[in-house]
Each structure stands twice: as structure tokens, then as C-alpha cells.
Length: 149
Length: 149
Picture 1 (cartoon, each protein chain N blue to C red):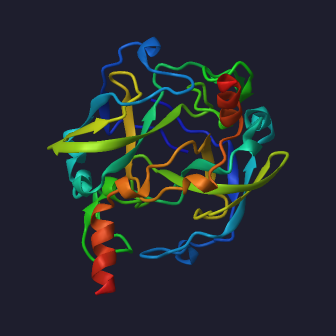
Picture 2 (picture 1 turned 90 degrees about the vertical axis):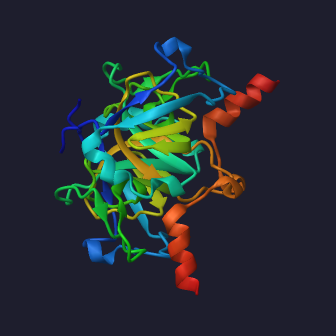
């Protein structure tokens, strides 16, 4: 296995976990900056051509993992691999962001939901989507339906 | 930072890198099994309700990273963070698969592009898509256009 190393850090408006919008209907419209370390700058070549990026990052302020937990969007417990809980066996987070602009090693993006200072592990281009009519969203769709009742 | 640990392993028809479809128009329709280690089984609770999963895994047979590389889909070099190259600073791969069925700790899925025996680091539910009309795909769209000419 490998030991993770940061390729950069997130600059985000969120300083504390409680400030991040969570639960049903939460919108992630916040703007932030992915500040890549200078030694990795060549890896950003041609990234400007992509509208959306997948950011893989580390839940560096999360402790222990919890295989069953109750997410903010429901009042019932679900398995960690069926949620986006921070308490995961490998503390890896994933966020899809919209790339607004690049200035050297700084990627200005919309849609951050990470804490300020979060270590970035990887960035990949977002290449294709599952058509919405083919997507089933399990307990989350059920929790949304219960909320609407 | 953290040291990665496998939560399970991929059972895939691909034994060698050369067997995995790559490049422009490559289809990932292969079926495989995500075999989760028994101690993590409670983490799979309610996963059956999701049609698609994001699998985060380790490029365990990839060596060194390369910040600029020429992908199989183009004859020009691009930055590693603008490609899905295996030679990444953190050797983390990501694949979206369709969940066909669950049998205990075995998730039968369609769309694997990993080698047989690949360590799985995390599984997350696929919750939403970027509408295709909002997606720009940079050098990849350009390489596709050149190929059609």
C-alpha cells in the first residue's frame, strides 16, 4: 500500500465542519481555490480545457471510522460505503467542482465542500456522466420522499 | 497523512494491463466483482439501493509518477491531472460502475477497468451527474474531433 502525500491544499470559506452545508437539498456553490504545490505544476498542463474536475482529498480532521452511521440527510443508519460520511476506513473525500479559471498553480473552482487547508491527493478530469434516468439513489431518494410528505 | 489499507479486492477479467480497453471510444462493459473483506461488511448496509457506485482503488502495479505523459487517446502530452494516467503522485484510481447485485460481501458490477486483484480503498454512492450540455472535455474532445477528420 502507499502513504498519501499532498499535491496541494484547498483554500475554502469553511473553517469549521458546522459551516459546510449538509443534508437534504444542501447546495455546494461555494467558491474556493485549489493551490497546487509548485513542484506539481507541470501536471496541470491542459487542465483549463475541462469544465469540471474530480478532486480527491483527505479528511485530515476526521478520526476513527464508523461502519454504520446516521447521515445528516436521514434519521436512519446506513453503511459507510452507502454514504459520504467522513468516518471512512481510508479517509478519502471526493468532490466534483466546476473549474472557473486557472492562474498558474491556482485553480479557482466552484462547489467546494472541504474545510480550509484540506490536503489534496489527486485531481482528475470529469469525463462523462451517468444519464439521470439511469441513476437510482437508494436511501437518499427515500429520505427525500419522506421529507416531502 | 495516512497509509492506505485495502477494504477488499477487485475480481476482474483483466490479468494484464494490455487487455484493458484504452483510448478513444474504449468501452468499459466488463463485469467483475468487488470482494469486500468480511470485517467491513456492515459498511455495505443499504448499498443495494444505488444503481451506480464510485470505486476508489490503488494502482498497485504502477511505478513512479510522471507529471507529463501522452495518453493512449492522443499523440500529444498532457498533464497527469488532466488525464487518467496510472502514473500519479498518489496512485489512486477511480471507476464508476453499475451495481448489478450484492451477495453478502460480493458486489457484482459492470464497468470494471481495473486489473484482477486490485486493492479497493473506498466505495461511495454515485449521487448526481453534471448535465452533458454543461460538460467540456478539453484535449479529449479535440483528439476525438481530429480522429473523425
